[in-house]
Image (cartoon, rainbow, N blue to C red):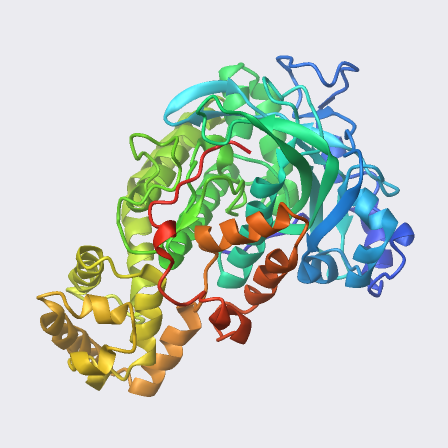
Length: 549
C-alpha cells in the first residue's frame, strides 16, 4: 500500500517552493510552520475555559495553548534523524535555548496553531465515550524540503478539555519509553509515528501511582515531541457516530481523503469504500510487522489506532524476551485481551467498529461492499503474518505446510523458553547444514535452548527440505534473514536501566539506545559490552508495565 503524506493545495503553493529549497537550518529562530495549517479548515472549538473538562460538540479540535514546563530544564535526548530528515534542522539546534523552549512548550515558531484533537474509543472492548488529547498539543504543520507534511505534537504539555481526571502531564519514565520505541520501531521497519526530542524539569513535579497500589509518589514532569503525518484515529469517527454528528463525519472523511489519501478520487462513488479498504489493509500490514519483531502494543483500544496505519501511543508496550504467545506486558490487561497472539484479531475487531462508525455517511451499497471487505480481513492478516515469519526464515513464497513449519518452531521456542529475537537471529548466523549438530549450537545461547526440544531434528529436516523446494541458496538464506532479524530490540529491562540513570540526570544510556537503534540489524560493540544480545538478566523476567504515565 502507498503511504501518503498530506498534499499541498494551491493555497500553500508558495510555501512549498520556499521550503523545498531550504538547507538544514542552524538558526532555529528562522524555522517556521506552514500558515495556515491544513487542519484549520476543520471546525475548531475555541472555548476560553480550555483547561476544564467539557463534552466538546461539533468540532474536530479544540484550540488550546500549551502549559510550559517550569523550573530547570534538561535536554534528555533528540533524534538527529527526525530533526534532519523530517524537520530540516541541523541537529546542532538542539543545543540552543530556543529549541529546548520549543520542546518545553515555551516557544511557538511563527505559523503555529496549537490544538488538541477530539476523539472517543472502545477501551478493553467497552465504549469509553469522549477521550481526546488530554495532555497533548499539535503545534502546527511543517512542509519539509522533500514536500512531506508533518505535524509536531507535544505530549505532557498541559491540560486540555479532554484531560478528564488527569493533570495534563507526563513523567520521565514513560516519555523515555515513547521516545526510544518510536525511533527504534522506525529503524526496525515498523510503520510508526516518530519522536524528535525530550526534555525534563528538575522542579516541576507530579504525583503518580506507578503500580496502582495506593502508594503515589512525586515524579519529574517531562515532555516528548512526537511527529506524525497526522494524528487522526479510528476514534476520531467513533465519537462523531456516538454523538450523532454525521455532517461533521462526512466533512472529516472528505478532508482526510483529500489531504492524506490523495490517490483516492474524492469524486469517486466508491471513495469511502476505497478509503476504508486502505485504512484496514495498512493497519493489518502494521500489525504483521509487530508480530515479526515480537512487539506487543499493550493497549490496542480503538482510540490508539491511527487512520494512517502508523503505530501510535507507546505506553505499556513490550518486546518479548522468551517467546510466549500469550505475552502481555500491561499489568492492567488482566484478561489478556491484547496479548501478543491476539493482536491481529483485535485489529480486525477495531476495524469492524470503525466501519460501524462510518455507517451514517455510507450508502447501502457502500455498507455491503465494506462488509465484504471485512470478511476477507482475517485471511489477509493471517497470510501477512505468515509471510512475515517466512521472511524471518529466509523464505519468500507461501507453500503448503508453511503454517505448521512456523508453528512448530514457535511451539519449540515456547516450550524451551527460548528468546524470540535471538533465536531467529542465531538461525541466520549458523549454516543450515550444521543445524542438526547440537554441539555446533552451544555458542548460540538461545538456539541452544531450542535444539533441546524433542522435535528439533524433525523440524530442521522439514526446514532444509523447504529451502530446497524454493531453491534458496545458503548465501541467499543468510542474507535475507540477517536483513529482517535484528540483533537488538528495546527490551523493557534495557529501558529500565536507562530510566534509572536518567532519574539522576545521567542521560548517557538513553542516548546510547537511540544510537544503537539507528542500526538494530548490525553488531554494535557498546551494545555487546552491555549484554544487549545476551540472555536477559534474571530480574527482567516477568517485568510488566502499567498505564501510569
